Length: 329
Image (tube, rainbow, N blue to C red; front, top):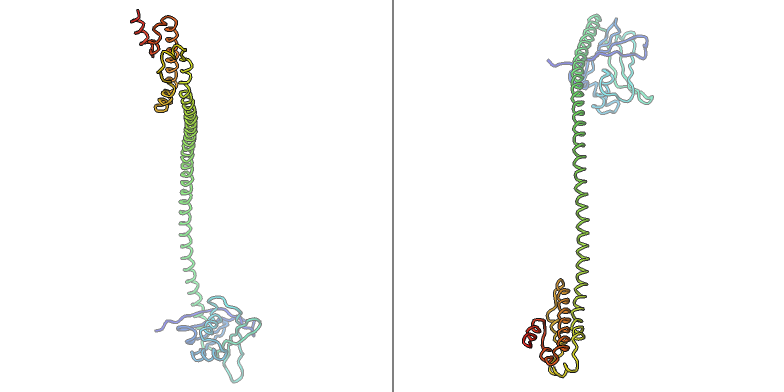
């Protein structure tokens, strides 16, 4: 047996606004396959049937697609489904003499223009109390079903509310933990940041010290280089000074006709072997002392041992003089 769907709704008849009617609709698959209508005002009842061919004919008459026509028909007769543009109205044609049938027409009103969706012939029911009882039973069933559905929704709502409260408490704990963790991390970050700043300051100080040290070394090397150049210049000029102090008299020039000028030899020796920068000053001082010492020796020999001047002129240092002096004695 095919399961049939049932719908009951309250409608208003435009031709009889003071009366209230109840419309019961039954169908098998959808309204396109046909349906049965029961109309009652609480006292009397009428019934009628619309076949599948009638539905197709009505759709062709108004030049509308069958699927769209069935959707509008379902919305007009049951009042269920998505909201559509326009309104629906019902008209009931009263009985006429010799015609015990009523005609119920349903129309769609859109932009102040109405067009008929369909019409069904209704015949009086012999026992209207049975129809009224069915309407009441269906209403009670729908009420119980809606009540059970409402109860189920209330339970689901309470369950969702409990879950929401539980999640809210959990989120509050998470937020508190997050704030505590942020404070802890911020404190650690400040310590690390201060330590890094101290290290950066120490490194900057060290870099500055190294730069100063490099600058001092550069200046010292520059000073040493200049001093080295000065020493070399003094070393080049020292043989001339020595020749000035160590100049001989006419007798020495006669006694030493073959003695060569020491200046070229001294300059050549100075060019071949130059003193190192750190020892140049000491070596120059030693040479100056030796030159003065030889001059003193020659002068003393000239004053005391004039006959031995030719021999003493060959003396170069103190040791040789002392040796000659002892031999003379």
